[in-house]
Length: 201
Image 1 (cartoon, one colour):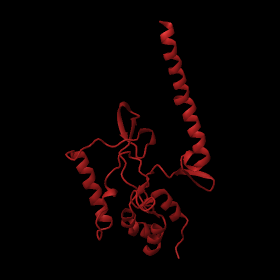
Image 2 (cartoon, helix red, strand yellow; image 1 turned 120 degrees about the vertical axis):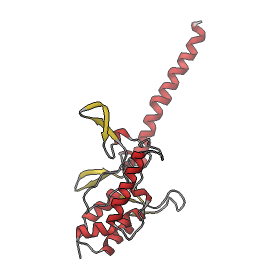
Image 3 (cartoon, helix red, strand yellow; image 1 turned 90 degrees about the vertical axis):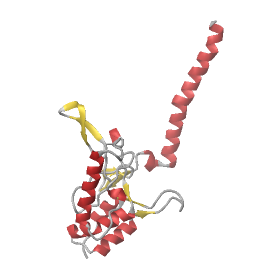
Image 4 (cartoon, one colour; image 1 turned 120 degrees about the horizontal axis):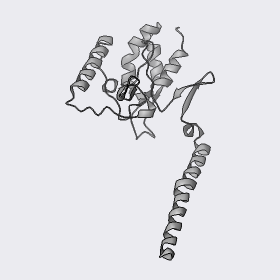
């Protein structure tokens, strides 16, 4: 019986070493050589200090900054471990909200966001990505329309001409991958960093 089991055990150990250790280490090493920035998390630095990642959104509340999509991520409630509290862009707990189209809480939140944004810019239709969360809750990008919608608020808060802020949005708009895949997008952190480096003229 041991003679029949031994080959199965050897194959199991060999495949475990190959697929569980050698292959992941080889792929990590290759990725580090071919795509070093991406392999290290696509970190964004400013003045030698890491300020975020191009892959994970951040919450910006100040009017002088562009704001990303709403995030539904949560964290354990410090006062009661059996409950959760909102923790926008919590990379340790990537998730959507699990609220469906019949959810009163979701409808109330979206309506509140739409009303707030309409008050901010009554002349424009509210882009859908500014009031809906992504499946991961970590989306770092918004649509060009979502960025352009926010231009009047940001320009006013920074005392900049709207045309100058629109130009920054255009400069930070990424097109479809090879012209086919995905949608045009604007990385909110990169746009805000570019905005911080701009002075009124």
